[in-house]
Length: 138
Image (cartoon, rainbow, N blue to C red):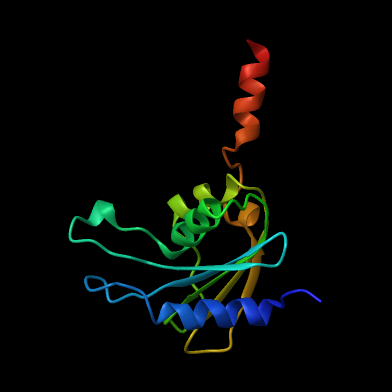
């Protein structure tokens, strides 16, 4: 039957409670849907050396990659803000590496949801296709 957007967002909201964010106090949860309807979750994990911080979206994606997944249908991202918040630029670039798929943005404080896609969040993206074109010319 498949996984609904609501179910995926619920997973992101639930896992957000496990975020490690002692510095920003800004928990984020992500739930990534693979092509076989497996849900892989991730949270943001901060570090005193701020550059060592990993966002929830990249945490979910690297977990999925470690498990062998390479194709994805959607990602849901939840924060505690009233308005849904989009992924940072680094996460947008990281996610588009694996194709254009649905993005569901939500909040744990409101029912407002934004449905979009990776390509909409990162127009004119640099993708593996650009590298393929470059190597074909050599």
